[in-house]
Image (tube, rainbow, N blue to C red; front, side, top):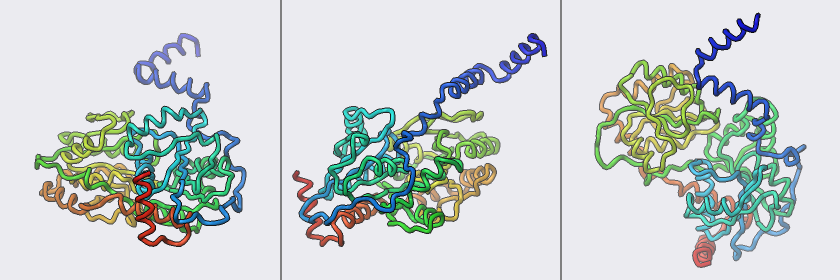
Length: 420
C-alpha cells in the first residue's frame, strides 16, 4: 500500500468516527503507552497477601463492658455520592450513638491527605465524627478493626499486626468485579481469612457460601423511607429513569444501553432520564441529570413510571428507593436476589436487552399507573436502616465483649457516648 493510499484510508476512517472518535483513539493510545491502567489497582504489590495466614493475633481478654470500644474501619478515600461509603458511615454513626469511638484508616497507594478527607467527610456526612488516619502509618490503638473491601483485608493483615478483633463488612461479592484472573483471586481469597464476616443481605451470604462453603453473620438491607417517599402532589407520571455507572461492570452498563435503545424505539414518546455518570455511546435522546442529592432523586423517581436498577454482585439499593417513591424498578433477574428483594411490585427480567426493554415497556403501558405507584410505595413504608445498624452494633459488641450485653449495660454505654 502506497503512502498516498494509506493516507486516504486514514482520512476516510477519521471522517467516519468524527472528532469524538479521533479523541478517543488518541486517549486510548496514551492510556496504553503510559500504563494508566495501573491507577485502577489500588494496592502496592508489597501490600498484597502472598498466602493466607492461619491465625492472627487476638486480645487475650475480652474488653470490659464498662469501657466503650474503639473500632477501626479501613476503606478507600470516601467519595461524595458513593452509596457504599454512605452505608459505611451509617454503620459508623450507629456505633457512635451506641457509645463507641470510631477511627477511619484510609488506604490510598497514591498518598493520603488526612486534613482534606476529614473536611470532606464533615461536609458530606455531618452526622458522624470519626478520627481519620493513614492506614499505611499503622493500624493500631483499636479494639477491633473492620475491613470494608477485599483490598482493605490485605491492608489490615499487613499494617494491623497488634492483637485486635478483625471483622469484614461485605457489601458485594467482589470477585465478580473482575474477569477470572489475578484480581478475582486476590478478592476471593479474602473470604478465607480469619476475620468475622458480616454479609449485607441473604443474597450475598448465599453467594459466599456457594463459592466457599462458609457461612457469615447476615444483617438486613435497609431503605430510608423517610427520604424516599411518594410526592406530595399527585402529578401525572411519565418516562423512565436509569442509574448510569459505565466504569463499573457490575452495573451492566452495556446491557442497559441495548435495553434502553430497544425501549426508545418502541416508546419514543417516553423520556429517558439518566443520572450518575455521563452516558457514553448511547445514541438515543436522554435527559442527563448528573449527580443528584437524595431529595432531587426522590423528586425524579416520584414523577417517572419505572426505572432500570441493575447489579450483578448484590441487590442494588436503588430498587427499594425507587419503590418508596412509587417508581417500578426493573431488576436483572438472579435467583439469589429474590432472597433479599421480596416485593411483588418489582419487575424481574432476564439479563438480555429484549427482556429488560419488555419489562420497562410493560410498566409504562400498564393500566392505572397512579394506583400501582401508590401500592409500590405502600409496600416499603416504615422501612429504615435501623435494623441494619442494630444488627451491626450487636455483632461488633459480641466480638469485643463476648456474650450479648444486658439492655441496661447498652443504655449506660450509649449515655457515656452522648456526653463524652
